[in-house]
Image (cartoon, rainbow, N blue to C red; front, side, top):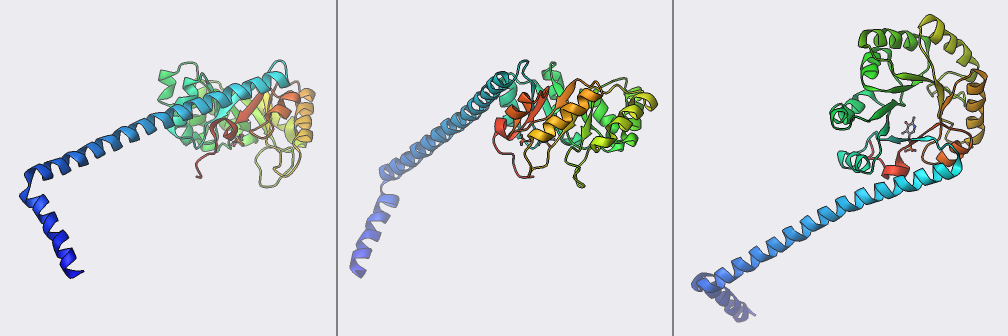
Length: 269
Ligand SMILES: *Cc1c(COP(=O)(O)O)cnc(C)c1O
């Protein structure tokens, strides 16, 4: 054993130190290996991007087809881009999507302020709760604010619209399940808020939005939202998400808000 390892040691020393050709060959082999790795890695990055683009484009086409089959006219597909990385947003823009939903003002600014310039046809919906002190930011960025749910916010939005010279469309969010932790007005209070928004704040309201309780069938909530909209002559209905956009379309949704079914899973916040 001892003499054996001595021999191996000697031969390594001889190749590495005493034989320049061997050293050169070893370096070359390492370089080729590194180049090959780089190439493979580059290819796999390109393939990954292609796959992402293709997956998102395919899912979008399938969802649009399902919506068209479920109802005529088909509801507008709002792509919910909250928590999505830039690659995913670029991929769906490349696929032709122009209508997006975000649930936080600040993240929406990060996603869309600069893209407004490169994509003039964008339509942005705010689908998350809005604090009165962010009303001006929201009015500046969004084309539709779906989450009007109290008088104070109606007043703040009216002031912001006056100041900004911009009038996003407004939907009232209705808490159809009357869940204490959830935003939105209770169904019995829609009439009051609508009257306040129109008569006191001078706002036009175009529709209603709801997020049914997670643990209940969505159908009755969609039906209730539709009935309330009908009672007050409101034409737009934002309802239906990844799990139930077809059902919502059959209930007469004019807008569905779809995130994960389009993009795949969101990064955990
Ligand atoms: C995140 C979100 C959606 C999209 O949810 P998915 O299940 O990913 O389709 C729809 N509506 C609102 C209000 C949301 O916050």
